[in-house]
Structures are given as structure tokens and as C-alpha cells.
Length: 64
View 1 (cartoon, rainbow, N blue to C red):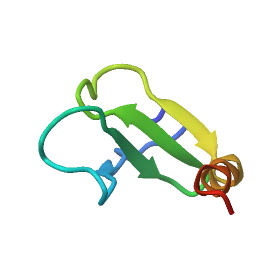
View 2 (cartoon, rainbow, N blue to C red):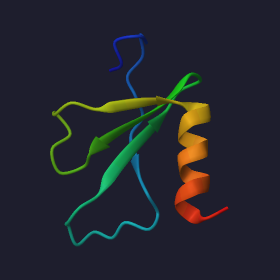
View 3 (cartoon, helix red, strand yellow):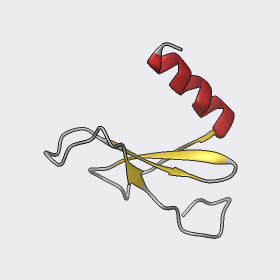
């Protein structure tokens, strides 16, 4: 659960992720942020980005 929010986060993996294991991230989207964590060790720390910054990163990553 996010420290700034009072509801549990709904985590999901990318549709590009397979079930073979390996390296994968999970995301949870809230009105104010996108939360990212390691799917292999979900109890570890997570990162949270303002939605606008996450959108800018995704545009950069896909080259648009």
C-alpha cells in the first residue's frame, strides 16, 4: 500500500511479460502516481512517479 493512499494497490504485469520468469516489473496506477516494483521480490521497495513524468518516460522509451 502506498504511504500516501489508504487503499491497497492493484498490481499488474505488462502484457509483454511471459510466464517464464526472468526480469519483470509490475505497475499499479493511482490518480496521482504510477507505482513500479520488481515482480520477483514484491515485498521490496517500490518506486512511484507522478503520472505526467511516467507518461514522458514511456513516450521517450518507445521513441514518440
